[in-house]
Length: 356
Image (cartoon, rainbow, N blue to C red; front, top):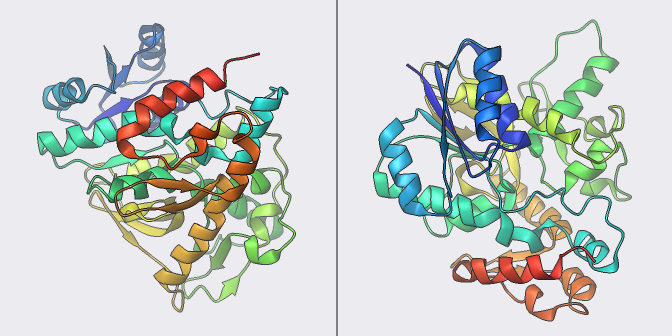
């Protein structure tokens, strides 16, 4: 009986659950969250699909609670979709602090994305249960941070997979009577905004890399920007879910192999082409594309998210843009972020971001 544990059942977690339930590949879903409407979400999915749905209320920041959850349910796949604050929480706010934090990039809000993920990965290692973990919470940066601790999730979800879907949509419109060729992409979270808005960067060198064909010889970095524009907002989540579902299904026992592009395989920064097979993920770069060049490109693009570097101990240093935007309001929140300071920094950020 294939069992999937989803930690974090907000909008994205519920979309993942619904997609997995509809696939017919999962017999049991375990939904874990701290929300008060978890029962309603579980009942909806169980009523709509032929799948058993169990629920458990949990504060997943507590490692011991996650360990007990893993030992009780022995899942075949863990989907980590929990964060302390949604990346969309500031959307629509026009006050000066919100504008500054938005302009600084998502990196500054890592204290909201890392705590649950860190707890989950520590619990997985402590239990010793060999299970793939797919992480939704800012994987392009969070997974490499955890890699410095030997705690990298198996793979990330969304982001470069969304770019791939956008490129495939544009290609299908361009070549409606032809089968889609193999498409492989190198790109990062920061690309998502321009790609979804169909607005390419001024410098073509800043576009994500899209390779078509088995040998990757056809380069079409323009394609992801050619799909119809989607205004920023929660609608992005529909594309995120569709882009992630093939990866989740491919990680299940007995699944067919998948060639896709995903964020942060093997704890790498940004996103890369991969093969998913037998619950494991390996790189699938086109011939002539070096991993070193791909990593360097993604690290450069990550500066758009405000991340200058990740130290060997996991400490994050922010870019000059972050300092210029946010230091006038709270210089302490732009200091280098160490893993042992997540709770303190999250509390400080919450205080800073309280609605005016």
